Amino acid sequence: MSARLNNAQPYAIGLFRLVIGLLFACHGARSLFGVLGDEPTVPTGTWPGWYAAVIELVGGTLVLLGLGTRAASFIASGAMAYAYFDVHQPSALMPIQNQGELAAAFCWAFFLLVFTGSGAFGVDRFLAKRSSETTKTSREKTDKAPVAA
Image 1: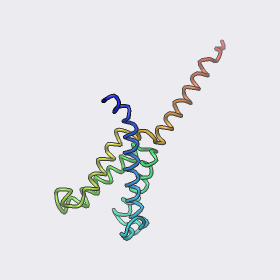
Image 2: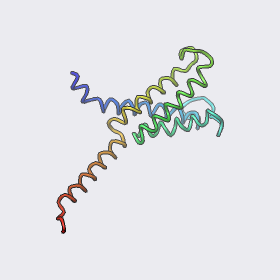
Image 3: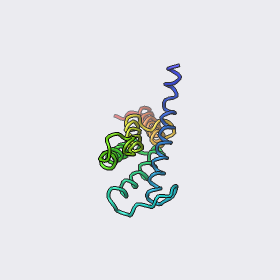
Image 4: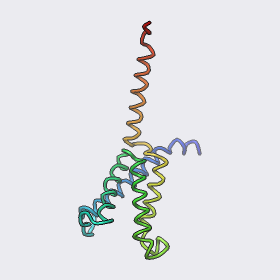
């Protein structure tokens, strides 16, 4: 059973990344453009709301695609940690009391992706596979080339 679950791990991480990235990007799109909800948009350039929304939209999209997953997740995790401690935590200690559950959950989800990477279905994985095939092909060509004295 454990071996079967281990074989499925990249696919589970890939699906996790897709869902988290989509939810995060939707949150940013709602804040920036007013789509997907009734909330008013954040005024351009306001600190920290507008910058957080840009990080949410861009970071969520990158994570969704699996492109630069570790770096985008690191930035997104930091943004959500800031959101929790600066925006939510001053009003109450526990996330359930200060409405910071979403910020805390996103923070830890992205922190996990920093260490796991994109998993299956990600552009990162495709590019890494393609790069290793190119390197392998170029090595084979140089290994077969005659040595001139």
